[in-house]
Amino acid sequence: MRGLEWEVAQQASPSVTRPPDLEEAPQIEIAPSKATAPRRVRKVAKGKKAPRFAVLGAGHGGLAMAGHLALMGFRVNLWNRSPARVEHLQMRGAIELEGVITGEGRLEMATTNLKDAVSDVDIIMVAIPANGHRDVATALADVVHDGQTVILNPGRTGGALEVRNIFVKKAVTADVTLAEAQTFLYTSRHTEPTSAHVFDIKNEVALAALPAYRTPEVLKAVRVAFPQFIPGDNVLKTGLDNVGAIFHPGVTILNAARIESTHGDFQYYLEGITPSVAAILETTDRERVAVAAALGIHAHTAREWLYLAYNSPGRDLYQAVQSTPGYKGITAPSHLNHRYILEDVPMSLVPIASIGEMLGVPVPTIRVMIHLASLIHGRDFWKEGRTVERLGIKGMSVKDIRFLAVGAGT
Figure 1: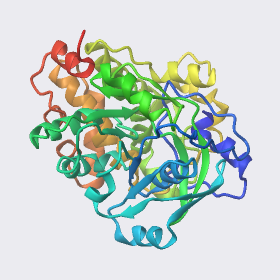
Figure 2: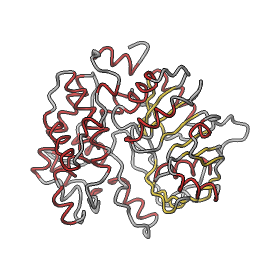
Figure 3: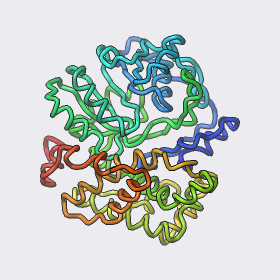
């Protein structure tokens, strides 16, 4: 993956400045893309019944996804909470793409009205930070209808479970399929309110439905547009095989002083992960893997992921990181008010810790990270985050949780 495909993207468009928040959480299933030039856009086959899409979110990823779908010939509605950005899209009526995808994708609709955005679509692609999933799910509960599929891009840890729990509490009766991607399909940023630069598109992204037996039908529908989606085992696997939950908040918190004093002017992985930092990260990672194992899930360790993704050798995590040339040049965030804490702590670390504590798995180091992040920002991330109560699994046995995730035949 070459550390978020930045080197690949830079070769494709060396004049584009890398935004500080571009990185995506590394994931096991993702293969590095070989694209170094604009790609030919695949058009929808004539006579083929094509699904209609709504993309929720007009940020870095949402613009890229909506623009690409429209450019391929799909009918796309784009929703965003901010009227200012929607107004620009309404005036232009299209999204301009540059980078590995070039062209203009014309939208069916750009709106701040969620009901209008999703009323006539088949697939709802949620492309907002995981912090916003709860609010969007609450709003969607009143407007979804039979036959629709809602896909979180990505779910982080427990995303689909949280949305399902909200739908249950809101007494949603519509037959709606929930699913989540393990990571985001695009590496991109918006350059203007109606333009996006796409640095790269991942070759493979695991996707799992809730329950898992619905995954094939979701893939059949969404792969008409995105053949990059491949079957994920289940949403427990996609959520707990989340190596970004270790690298992002841990490295940021443990380098807080350096980030504040240098404004991120150092190499995030190669300099930010010293032997001492790596030792703490490995302990945190062992706790994540232990929580997954308690649910019957085999999660790769961070060191295993480095070997699988980069062929990086090392007796420990520090050596493996230092053996990863793809991390060269990846700089740290310029401030601590960053999604590596604001999103990854409540939406990744909190659910891992909360599940672990419910199942009797010790998670002291993850708990410390959550506490430190809360002190840094003067807020209670545990209270804000995806606890087992919010995931709708409080008090459930492992068997019941697995049945919820997998469904029939478990």
